[in-house]
Length: 318
Ligand code: SER
Image (tube, rainbow, N blue to C red; front, side):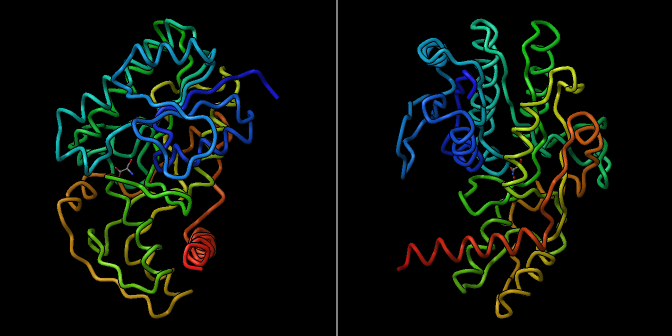
């Protein structure tokens, strides 16, 4: 076991909660410090309250626990961000700058910062979107992520801070629920299906978006963080890809297991956000630089999701 101590900011979120468990298994329970602005529902073990806008508290936690790595996951996502653009900018941007600045001052060895497909916008090539391309996002979330990528690169080139990042597509997992995103439908739809309920989708049936299964997301993130520093050629953020599908295609896949599953479509304001993003991603740089390779596609993900959710609902119900 290594002597690394990991601070996770936003540990209760969709990705943070799963990443916390993965890091605990890896580094040991005592070496992982999960933090969030609210306490987790079913948490056992160490937990600290932390608002990412409180730079002093971040610094105290880093000192107290001799933190060597920070995973900074706290952010307001695309759909929720549009309800309150300026507060979203504060959380996403000031939060990141607090983390980067504390990491620099305290000589934290490595920082992970998630970016997103939300960095792309209507002027970006939509199919097989290249690593280096036009980035003119139309959501405040996307604007904050583009800026965050550039700040991460700045801290690397200016101060040598080892910040690493990937542009997550929509993340789908059975372990946790997303909140406030545009890709959330692709998790919700499985929960409805497994409960034998119909699903009303807030995107049009032909809206194609890039997606990634949680297991691949977590493994890929840990692989990125494990890679030798000289392999990390991109210090803004790596494109990451696994699959792309539409609501109609995921419904069809679910129906192979649950033939009675019904989906209707009632697009809302999130349709415009989805329409501004790209449909599929070229992740050849991540593959080449640090060996990224996803394992799950739509059929294998669907099978795995339904098996795990059936277990969860059975346990909860019985
Ligand atoms: N899943 C995010 C969202 O929909 C994209 O990063 O906002």
